[in-house]
Length: 255
Image (cartoon, rainbow, N blue to C red; front, side):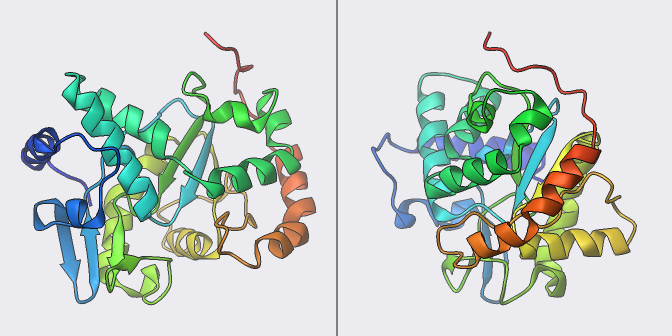
């Protein structure tokens, strides 16, 4: 699902109307004015951060859908930017940098990417450098661009599975595929088995090609109890895959 220009203008007006707060509640943001669609127990809400796409990225990390923590940080950051009269594009970019892989997920993903040698693949001093706003090598995104709730809880990629729910799968086709095509030279790292399952279906349907996908990376959530076991099982294969790939990514330099 993509938002058209009329919807964007409406949503920008809503963002500008929000009062500044140190933190927003679910009651503040899970409102009908921000709901983009629903089917049964599945609801989709707007969030500004995935509106920004770094088209020069050499690596794309793909999650399932933004969670509540990302959504709240994104709104807080974007609203602050708009209140100081930044453009919508700038507000979305700042929201992206603030919200991407927020919390323990960022710590976990950095450690695992460092362990498989992504910093050497990209010729950066440390994977942590990729999250510097001045570094243009990384793009983080989700299969479903906007936050999904199932029975008013964060969607985890299961119950229903994306590939078995028309509403969710159409959202993937509408928002993720254009990003895939826009970043057609980047290394793609799916975060977890749920993301991999969707990418494999897209491969089967010949909507994408798999030569630039790094399979086997676990979802970095602290709630994923199998994260470390899966990582150790697949680490050597991922390292071999990286060593066999080539990139034109430039050396990271702070401007």
